[in-house]
Image 1 (cartoon, rainbow, N blue to C red):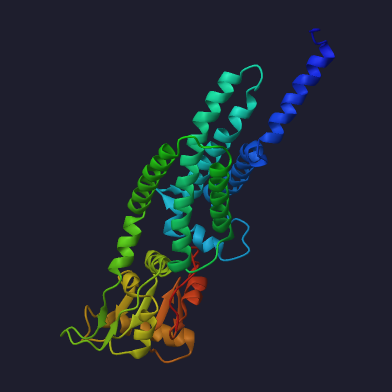
Image 2: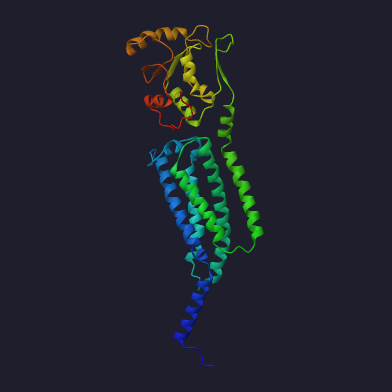
Length: 338
């Protein structure tokens, strides 16, 4: 048998390479670049949101996303959730693309070892991100009740990376894969519920009632409406800036005003009781401020009357109007209204 020439050897090598590529499903060849590209895009978006958060500036929004990004759910351990999202996407991009930087012909053993180890890391990471994003989608739909395109995009990226990880290679040990998925899912769910336990507990506490009546204990009105995160933050803001709502327990308009804040937020609503027989009355203060209110508003002092930033506003006000006149910058996806 005659030995092969150099050109014949090259042709044979190319032929074998082409045959291997033809026999390898395209999803196996392109899964890592696709996962890496998605992760890089996710890192860019979450990095942008994180920078805006640290600079205290507003991101570009085409929906009510700013209220979501400023909600209690957008913070983890006192830091922006987007920061942890950036770290997660950056890790996924590293796991996906790092083995591709190793020459497959010269360092085949190292390349194979990196691919095997990082595939399991990709599966674990994408599983955790998918479950966490799923929980946030639930919160978005049933708690915050609004739309955030940044959040939806992130959940879509997580789902895409999970599918590409499952289909991107031939998994020899399905049992190990299933066991890893169960462990990661359990840790993710326990960690997520633990992180957001204070928020969920506060929301659950809002399921009680709040009664309006005289000091004798008789209930004239009972409020059972729950508060959303936006109502709570607005009430805290009004309290912090020294706002006051002059009211009386028997006033139906005051009841309507307090009702839209909800039970949870009412403890922070800065209400001044003007009726002498009410709970903790401040009748003298109401009498002192009455002439100022009538002079400024041109109306007889009535309930409720708001005092915000040194100005008086007569009558019950929608929450978005209170937010505007008080300079409130938090979430405005209020769940209650008149």
